[in-house]
Length: 43
Image (cartoon, rainbow, N blue to C red; front, side, top):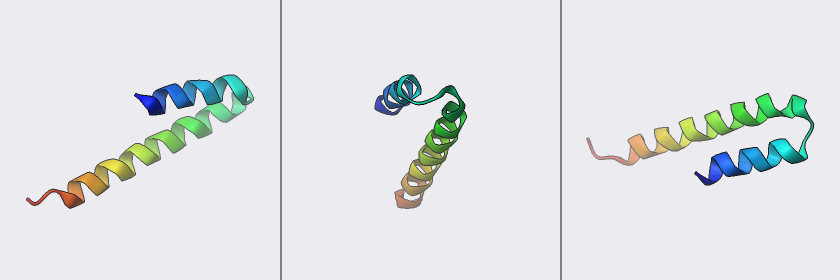
């Protein structure tokens, strides 16, 4: 939830054109977190 709040705060502070880059960065961070979690789970 904090990531979404941070993205909203950044969108308020930064120019509108930077919002897509923030969303892409947020998605990449979420994917890397999910990949790290999957890698740690003993299957």
